[in-house]
Image (cartoon, rainbow, N blue to C red):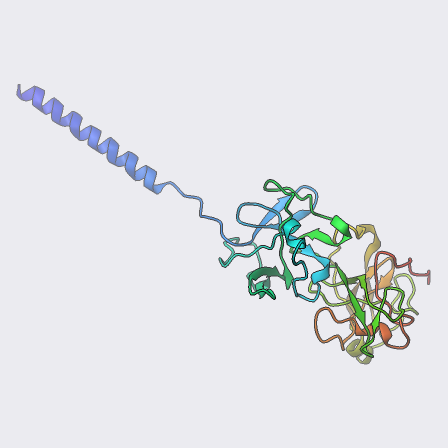
Length: 283
């Protein structure tokens, strides 16, 4: 009888030890943290793109280059706004470039590099990118564009409004900006791959070269049209498009400004740059 009781006791102790060990192992298993806020995802076609916490693709709107949401009313049915009050849990995302804007109706919208973020209603599942290129003004949101496309009104330094043909009038024009909405220009006397303007700090202070060695742009801009040159006078790299060295205008005080088009002549000396720009002439 005593032997039987001892055997039962040993069995009970062993079972308790097994249960405790199993419980401990279960508790020690690593858990996947909950995703919050904007996330980065790798797409086979577009590379790294921005998504929401569930993997739904986010988009930039070229008409929002100034940082103000312009997709309103019926537009929102197709391009719903994205907003998350949660800080991103993605360790690879530059949190300093994430922000928010308050729309005219009081609602908040998340931004990246100042661009309001949207969904595309026809993207039914995570990972879909059907909205890219729609109308030539909607693009998947990426953290690494070197160029962006603006679709906005041209307003010269003389405060007059111009069309894409540099005629006085209203109407949006498609032109290039950097990744933060700052307008980029070409210098008419330049040649293909040759900066004929920058001789030193004086010129650089008025028309700074656009420094970038990243050749990533929205899908309507052919990567093969992008290049990089070295400006020997100032020792800086300058991005080119179709051979044209690209510049900022220092007096464009804020994103969305395009005052430089009227300097030296309306569109003749410092024109905007767009996909319609002709290839720069050979040196």
